Image (cartoon, rainbow, N blue to C red; front, side, top):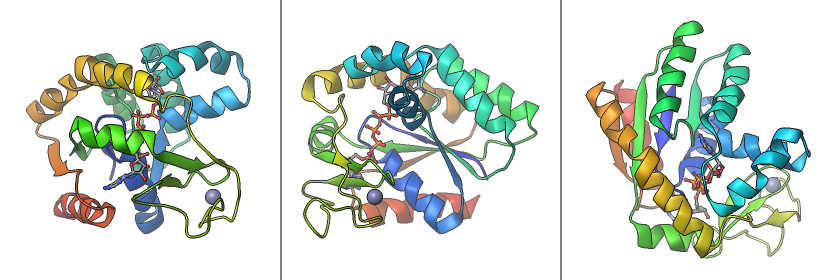
Length: 214
Ligand code: AP5
Ligand code: ZN
């Protein structure tokens, strides 16, 4: 099955996507991760989007649709779309792309978290530069200081856009451009909403409930 995880910055999309990869062998397609990878490897596109991302604005539809198109062309199923689509144009493009490869869109899971919690989550997040595991200073620290629990790397880092200024812009972008997708998918009968404020395990349980029902 193919699903979209929809929610504001810090809602826990990446955290839950990684669990679904572990537990169900699904494939995570995070446009945020793809864009960061492009930046780190210094591609032309990566250089072009770096400042836009650091400000917290959305990059162009054309770029992210191109990234997703490449991945879907590779085949497979059980995709988790994480951080994509983020605009109505991207949602329409995804519908076309899935049609082209003969894949359904089974569910759109909206993860609801209030703004106050989002600020705490984002400003206290850090990630492993090697395996991508996501941590939080308070709710999910590493067992041993400075070392990733999963892969043992000491390359733990914070994102350039995880500061209060960029977060403000990211939230505005979400409410203006992405939240209309909630109505869009509701109208298509695809929307399920989960309470993203619970503990990581509780949220995972709610998401499993949605997937196993369908
Ligand atoms: P992207 O990388 O997609 O960032 P985002 O949407 O802002 O989402 P985040 O990764 O910040 O949060 P998340 O929901 O994954 O939360 P996480 O699991 O990490 O996008 C970055 C930028 O790239 C955009 O601003 C834009 O410029 C560009 N971009 C990307 N896609 C694009 C697109 N489609 N179109 C245009 N531009 C695009 O969790 C956050 C923290 O909370 C962690 O510390 C975690 O440990 C903790 N946590 C998670 N769950 C819980 C819980 N249940 N309880 C307590 N703590 C929790
Ligand atoms: Zn790691």
